[in-house]
Length: 102
Image: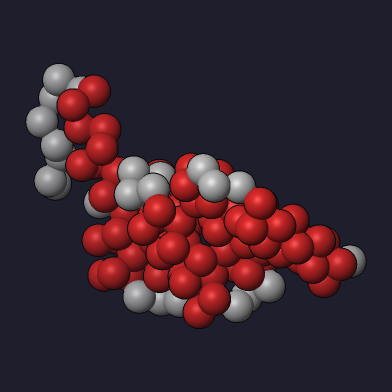
């Protein structure tokens, strides 16, 4: 079942990459394909797709978080937490309190 869903999702994402010229849609397509690779435990390809999504849309939070989660899943905690810190660079201005370092 997962293989069938994966094939369909990858096909749809590739089709959207080919047909669309909007970089935001390209980023979403790469993120979706990366997520399918993540489900299939193909971490190398998933990271490549998430990285491409980030290249196309540098503020794309889902791709940043997915890439961080892969590092955590692989046991590279230092890199995973470092990548998760990206979210504070994007959202820190929403909070009046200083960033907690404790």
